[in-house]
Length: 411
Image (tube, rainbow, N blue to C red):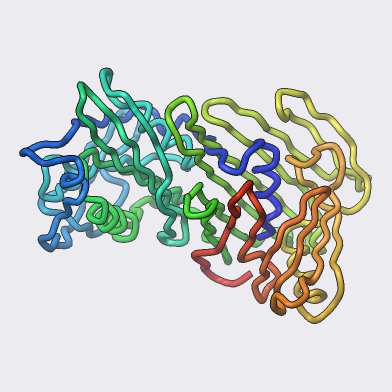
């Protein structure tokens, strides 16, 4: 997908490390992490952080009438399943330590930032959350999984909670483990949860014919991810879904979660029919705006952005993501010159088209280009289909980088 979206989200948020939150309601009413501070057994904090489960965890079969899934996970004992009245399923996986890995399976799609924020805000009274940071992004079953760590204190002791949020459209889930250490064990167990369980629902979401996951970081600091998916429309066009979750690390006063969501439909010629954009920063919805093509060929825009009502009428053809990639594939990637398109980019300007230009970047490789959108210019690398697979731009004294880590299917 065009990584124009991420850049403009960052620009509109005002910093290179803003963060996420959008389907917030699904992350409520779950058990609170116990978050017991360790050192225990006479261990220093450094020794406690270095702990791992060294014994091999067997694959354990999971099947319960209360669970919307079945399969196998790594576990040191029989996993527990409990369905709550709000249809959230609590799944506990013993790993041979004092506390199990606990996972929450949600009945509806989630935004990773909102789900993670809800977990960190559920720490019991008396626990002081000192700092939160994203640590890793992985792709499981074609969907993004964001890993985070939170350091906390209580009564002069310190602790750490590990969190994973898997924004999977089929089995959305978040997992946590509040003992210090066991970082690699947590990775292995949560990967088995994400990949070893399959939905038992009678109706399954339509699978995209193409999807990708990209990690976003500044220097060595992971900020979050961007994911995209393409579906065929019954009318012969294309449906595009995209989401971004970003985390600005820091103390509770600095910590910020940001979730954005895009949805667009284009016709068989690649022109926009409808497009929506939403954004949430922590628990505040800061954007909810939609563009629709009218019968006379113009576009109507309405909604809210940055606390202001937006209402506008746009004329002229507006390109979608897939048709932009096709123009790049047929032009720039075949040795052509610059490719220019008019697109609707709500964070840049919801009331007017945004002029987007891709120019070849001499000496940087056959698929290297410079992307310009208004006053913004970034370096990108295209894949063979014309979609951006890598993006770099200066961010203070570091470099903001986004890079594809997973792809399923072909556009």
